[in-house]
Image (cartoon, rainbow over all chains, first blue to last red):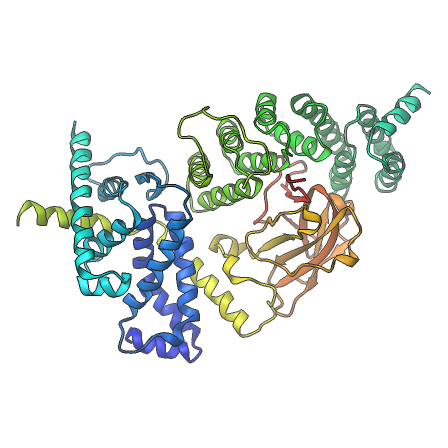
Length: 180
Length: 217
Length: 189
């Protein structure tokens, strides 16, 4: 069943259909929120809020739209609100994405790479994070990112380039430090 | 006779209405406990009253024990320990500590939190109530956060001027993390970090500010 | 493949790694949605504010969800709940120096639930909770003096349970830990 078909059923009152949509898209939402906010716990809060809002506003979803970008638009706004709640720019570290003892180091463990990614992204502000994650993480096209974020394609390209340069520089520093 | 005088003087020092509460407390104890248990428990309660310590928590422990059908020895021991805890809490928190603070402090001390930690909390928030910080501290210890980590977290948060709702939120978030399988000590550190990030004007360097008075945002 | 492409792949790979605990988080999200939809169908939970309500699967098995609401009368209270907010009681019925506190407890399958605590001498017969329409939610409203109160719930006369959403007392005096409730603490006073 397609997302659009599930939405039609959900609008008709089939909660199970919406739960199926959640099952399909929750992981992607949580991943996005966790990387943009740098905090897994807060990410879960934001994803729940997003899903509730999506559920309440299913009536505004139009069949010709794809569901995930529609959902991500809500998610992006929720993340912006959450990020705005912080009083100051905060340096986020990998500890917030990795549970338990963050000092465990295993070079072969993919999670080590994610820890490095998270630390490399730590210096980005919310706007650049958003663009970076949607482009390099989610692999979306610029036009789609523009629809989700409301920014223009040229502005997004600039943000992605800046973010990429900054993250890459930091990533290579961290990689160098780890190999010493 | 001397005890009655001490009791009368203690009643005057306590909040209005305490004198009659003593009698009703004793009546409740005699109604619920066997005589051989009621008598020593009432002794402990009276001694606490003579020290101007709150007696309601002691009565409550005894009645709880009775309702839970605990043995007489266990009930008496619990009441004695709690009385000792209240006295220790008053040493640590000072003579102006409110009954609820002493109650909360006694629990924390009995769980192994050192008196020094309570005294430090008092210095961190000299004017406002410490009930919430002590309740959060107790909760951390109850959930397996090592005492030192729990004390550090609550003390750092209080020193940073975090208001009570923020402390409670820190408690909830730490609890969530523990439920998700994180080690309690790590969970409390993360809870503190989150709180400090959200507390306006938190200094990045330790000790660069005086503790704020209560009533902050 | 040049270095840039390979780095992009590394980043993409790192990003795509599953977030630990995602399945449990998903279950919690679905639990919350069910609550929201139950509310929309008007099934008894009219006092529930879904924006604050969470369900933990581990606790779902234990079937307890208890929430405390402390009314803000006299400028002297705070909300100490996991997020379920009850309506505020009418002020006229509250004795001065105390605050009406609504206790909410979720116990599917229970035939009776009562509240025990410092405020009622830990008497399991003193404060029974009333069952709400859904059959799973039990409530009671109790005027409490300002201060610190220990309490627990008793299910079917034998099972003593703390409130999973509330702070725990640090010492299990008689083998089981109680919950702690603070009423009327407002440091602005």
